[in-house]
Image (cartoon, rainbow, N blue to C red):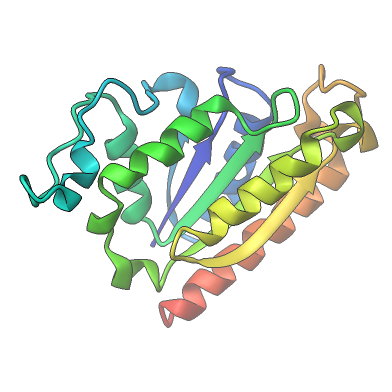
Length: 205
């Protein structure tokens, strides 16, 4: 069994990275293979400059899709998630919304989501951890709704949806590593254990 964590951040090593590493380290104690994918390290490009290749099947003169012309890391990352029975998302919010990196990553899936292994995903799970401060931005509650819909659209069993509000913990503006807070560790561990239990149950392990 494999667990993949997506760190949806434009920062190289921020709180979401720390959360992901903590969760995956705990997965390893169960003998679960792990991989951390940090969006900072990859090229993720939004839809642009194409000829509607992904919907050419609707064009009566072409009748079939063509490959997406954008050459970056998006498809590779999606394929890694498909190969994993457990998927964790770690998502900060920028100005009250999920990072633009997530928007680009999500919208690009329209070019190949029909190739996803649907039967395998039915035995796979997903949990999300959002780092959101609703009182600091009027748009932050929308981020929860948006990511909730995104998670539900992944064809996996949704197990956890945890929201970390930084002002409840060590630092009003997250300038210090939040992973040092014992309560955050407790909540992450709860999500981790709940998630791997659900994955094992689906796969009769």
